[in-house]
Length: 406
Image (cartoon, rainbow, N blue to C red):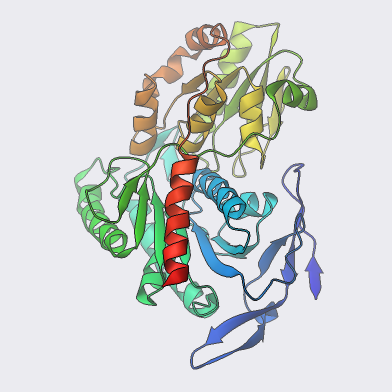
């Protein structure tokens, strides 16, 4: 075996490395063992021993849309719940960067997928999304070629997919049982005529895939199809009590956590949040900025910065206030933790705008941070809101049992 060292972007409770190893795969007309040194690297977690697996286990892929980190955090939460319920289950993640780093840092093996395209933005405002759809079309072609070369649909007998549609389409084409986890079954990002012209066929294509899946778990409104089930918020569990986490993180003052996810969209929010914090001159308050893997922020007086944190949910619980770009994962974790939240969405990001509106925020509130920060800090802890983890995991367990007994 050849080992390649991998240095995490920040300190993490688990470590991972690249490993080249023989991996069983189908090759057109015959099955054989193929050394992966000429193909794609599998990243195995060194946190758990996965070098040899029992033959009787139930093996499947868990694909994750790699734009940002929200889909990966939800997938990790679901995977942990599934493994607690079925000890015979083995999940090999399909993920591109930055989702790949989060998956491996949380103890799972992953096959390195091509990365999905990021949004094009200017100072917190999305560019016309037809450009993103064009980039996504290119990504789909690359991902399909990758899966045709690397996926073994004979060895891995089912697919779970959190919004990763290239793998879902390929699995359905190979008649592999497929379960989708989606925010919604259609997008509504288009704001200009050309983007609407492109978005319509894209929604039609995505809905065709969703209707052919055995199961669709939808976090938002969805059509009344027989395979659709509505689910509540999915969040990762907290590793310790709030008091213990604050002690571990050395949070001596009230702490504002600014987090912008795994894309480069949130630079505008970091800039304005830090500016408002300095203008307020709150002596008993410190600020922690988690910029994500695609942005770099320098530390300043009273402002501590991190790039990538695989256990961000623990920081959400330990903080006194969360300021976020209204990604579903961070908002749900803050609500589950009982931490007050300020959610400022990028302008034109329909999903984030819905998440923010549900909490009473909009993009223009970026100019009210000096007013909002003291108000929300004064709230103290809020009642934690219930999650939908158990319900979603129950649906997936039923899917796996039907598939295993077929």
